[in-house]
Image (cartoon, rainbow, N blue to C red; front, side, top):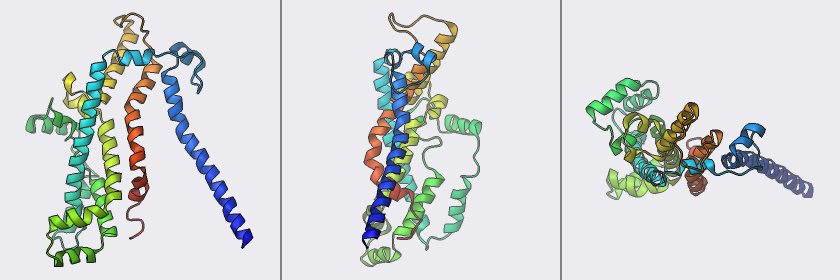
Length: 296
C-alpha cells in the first residue's frame, strides 16, 4: 500500500512538472510579443527578438496612440459589437438548438440536415456583399458589424443541441410539462440553468469571433466613427506601411516610425482585453467544450 501511495505521489509530481512546462511554453510567446513591442526598432532589426530588451522604445505605441480618441472609440465599438453580437448569437442558437434536441419535433432530421448543409457550402463573398448592401441595406451601420457571417453558426447549433440531448434528461422535461409548464418556461427555468457550461463556452467562442473580426468592418464600413479597434489598428498598420514605403514624413516631431514594433503593438492592443476576460470563463470552458463525449 505504501509503495502504491509513493508511486501515485511520484506520478502526480511528474504530471505537475509537465503541465508547468506546458504552461510556461504557452505564456512565453505573449511575453516575447509584449517585450518586442517595446524594443527599439534598430535593436529588433540588428539582433532579432529577445525576452530581455536591450533598448526600450515606446515609439510603436506613440504612433498608434497619436489619435487616442479614435482608439478609445474603437475599443467602445468593439466592446458593444462583442456584447450585442454574442447575446444575439446565443439567443438565436439556443432557440434553434433546443427544438432540434426534442425527439418529438416534426421534421427534426430534415431541419438538422439543412443546418449541417450550411457548413459545407456558402454563397461566396460577392453574392453575400450584394445581399447585405442592396437588400438589407446595412452598409455603414452598426448592423454591418453584427450580422454578416457571425450572427449564428451551424457548428454552435450542433454543439448546443448535443449538450441538450446528452445532459438534459427527458424525464425532467416531462415532469415540468406535468406541472403545467410551457415550452418557453421549460427552456428558461429548466434547460438554461442546467446549461451554464455550454453557454459560457459558446459565449467565449462567439465573443472571440466578434472581437477579432475586422473583415466585416473592412467590407461594409467606411466611416471612422464605426471602426472597431481591430479595423482601426489595421488601418493604422496599413498607413505605417505606406509611410515607410514612400518615405513620407507626416508624423509628429520626435516620433520615429517603427515597422516590426508596430505589428507587435497592434497584436498586444488587440489581444489584451481577451486575455483579461478569459480567466472568468476558464472553469466552464473545459467542461463545455467536451459536451456529448460522456452522456450525463
